[in-house]
Amino acid sequence: MCVKLYIIEDRCTQCGKCVEICHKGPLIFDIDKKEIKSMEYCNVCRLCITVCPENALKCLNE
Ligand code: SF4
Ligand code: SF4
Image 1 (cartoon, rainbow, N blue to C red):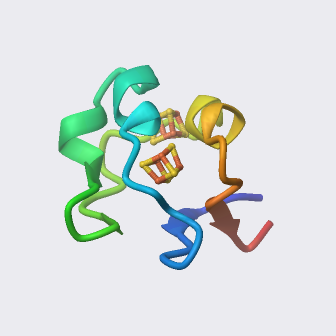
Image 2: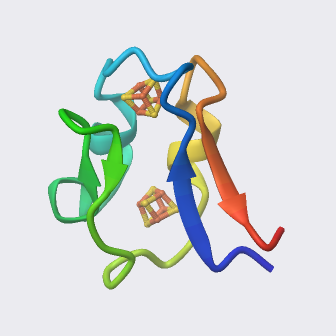
């Protein structure tokens, strides 16, 4: 069960694809800081994980 997303900083190239694909991207991702701002609007659809070309997004408690 995925309860929290996180970004592996070393892998993230700040391409922005995760923000673009997500229905609430700007509310969830802070790509400048390579951080997840809030999980409040995340429904764990996993689209961002699928689209990330660097495999930089992971779920905790998976
Ligand atoms: S899609 Fe992946 S590499 Fe691109 S900004 Fe998001 S986490 Fe970083
Ligand atoms: S899992 Fe879905 S809703 Fe959550 S941040 Fe990724 S694309 Fe957005």
